[in-house]
Length: 174
Length: 321
Image (cartoon, rainbow over all chains, first blue to last red; front, side, top):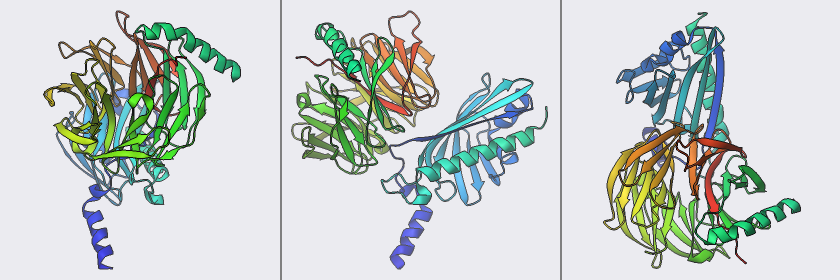
């Protein structure tokens, strides 16, 4: 009993003790048309610390480093915190790339992800493409159901979909 | 199927001559991880010649020198599958270690080296039986590996240890540890064996290792998530894919500078060079990009759709009778 408690505590304190990343990557890609102009949407997307204003799964954000490559943000989700780092900002292409720096399988059952968000003009509005490449949280060969590939794909797809919907709601009509 | 098989054999016979004279053959084996498919691609005409169904989640692939057999790792299953190229058939898989990942063919095709991702080991196995014949303890989460036949050494990227392990194949002893950038994954060796190129996934750069001095002599900034690396037959150019940037960089060996940078697709990973052609697998596009390296401005002159999730590739040399 004590042994189990200790193991649970160690896993809780050091989620990185799960294997850092396994050999089978997964992906999630979603796009959404938003009636606002690309400039309006890009202003929201490119504010790295501003995600809490439009993503309803993100309850709090602590960001450092502004909106340039190297910036970091700690996202508070319903079940814990994850840390992301901004890799690249291409204002011309209206595209940002970021990655997971500190995983937390309780908060989001994925590991080692990278993602890009790109805002493109579409008609009088925008189209936002959000894609991620990631690994399941437990990268050993026998992951439990809540940490397997299906769980990772479902969680990441939901995170992206809800993000896009939130972006649309925040950006408004035009 | 039989007609296509005859076609491939005829094509292989045709290229056997030039290949023997030093020109590279155009057949490429591509592993599509999500689909569980190995595609054989004619890079010259830019099309899939055949597809071979494999057990689930295949990862890395290596070809025997005569091009008759391929060996594919399945990390999630703990298996290695042999493939008969002419018969277009996967043979019976054998169990290797815990999570076999990187793979290389040694001893003219009689033996294999496999990196075991979760056992932190390099394992030597008999290619006919799958029996383990040697084992070396190396760093954490070993991924890509390359072999230098002349020195009898294997270089393995210990991804989570941020280093390359150098293993003497005859004794299966680690003889050196070379620190690199963060999360080294893919490796390539210059044709003269003197330089090793290491793609570092997390530090976004390429380590250049002097294999005589056994140390890193340069670290070149590439792009986001470098995941594949290949060297031209003359050793003059090094190609590096960066997944998150969707780009390919061509470096000049002498100046260590990027001379060409181009967009190749979504999440490019594996890169191989066959003669004057560079082939890149775009993991998220389910396609290959074929680049003619001799063009003044190299670009993806052809795209070949392949099965879902292409990652790593091997060049198949023609079988000689």
